[in-house]
Each structure stands twice: as C-alpha cells, then as structure tokens.
Length: 219
Image (cartoon, rainbow, N blue to C red; front, top):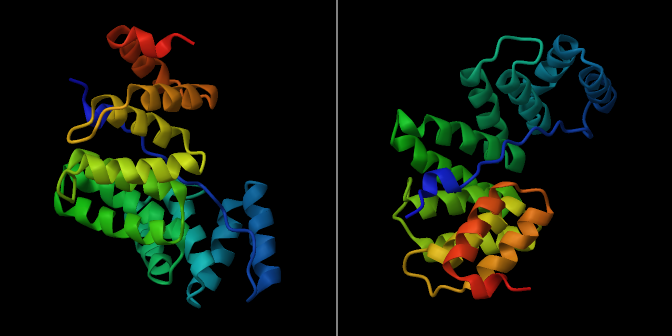
C-alpha cells in the first residue's frame, strides 16, 4: 500500500507581481531592482507601499522574507505580510500562506485547518496549484475528513488546467484510491501526461501500475 504523504507533491509559488496602479513608477522600479538582485532596495520600496495596504506590495514583502532574499529568512514576517494580502483577496498570497500553515502542521495540527481555509480561498480565484494542494489535504485527511472522492475532483480540475502534479495524484487515486471506482486506464493516461510534462515521480507509479495491470500499458 503506497503512502499518500510521499505520493503528493507540494508546489511552492515564487511569483513577483509586476503591475500596480497606485504608485506605479515606484513599484515598477522596485520590480526592476528585485530582478537585478537589489533585494534590499526593492524591499524598502515594497514595504512603503505595503504599509499603504497595497496587497501586491504586501505579497512581495512576504515573498522576499519567505525566501530570504537580501534579508534573513523570516517565515513569521512572511506569514504576517502574506496574511495581510490574503485578507484582501490576493490569490498568490492566499496560496503561499496556506503552504506556510501546511508546513507547520507537523508541529501544530490546527495549522492544517488554516491551510485548508486559505487553499479554498485560492481555489475560488482559480489557482490550479491550490486545487492540487487542497486535494492533497483531503486525500490525506489533514485539516479535513479524509475523502478520496473529493480529492479526486480537485485533482481532476487542476489536471485539466495542465498541472502535472495533479495528474500524478489523480492517477494514484484512479489506480489505488479508497472509495473510488478504480479506472486503471485513466490512471495510465494521467501518468503518461505527467511523465511527458517532466514529472519524474510519474515513472515510479507507472512501473507499479504496469506490473499490476500489464494490459493497461500495452500501447
């Protein structure tokens, strides 16, 4: 029996926002500084705009602290700024905030529920990675009752959006999920797509599937 904890892959977003209506010149210069490695200068500019409650600038401040770019990595500070942006509906911040909570779940079980909440918010904005990671929580029963059927629906949505991680996860459930009508052919098709997209983890599952059901892999 395979371990779902080892089978589901999490994606870390690292997107720097590059457009802003308010204070556009200052923001654009900060983006240029960031792209040129001037992280401290960029941080100062983003921070100034973030204090004016600009969600994109708040997200960028969080991103810089989360990745330790020019400053000491500080996840507490990152969580603070992601949280401010997330509450204003910034999908990338909602997603990254959820990831921080998920990472803390091994030490704080309640963190998984917070992760689920913010993934759900990011899903409302259509972020494909959020569908994948929310599905992983349902698949593993973290922050929510274990539900492979619900997880599969989320994986299928992300997979249809081109997420190769979701394709692997959907395949795992189609082949070995609990409470699901198994469909080895759909599992095979998803794994082939993921493998073609460069998702190396698909290879291990594909080998397992072909050993169990050789007929599926006879192209």
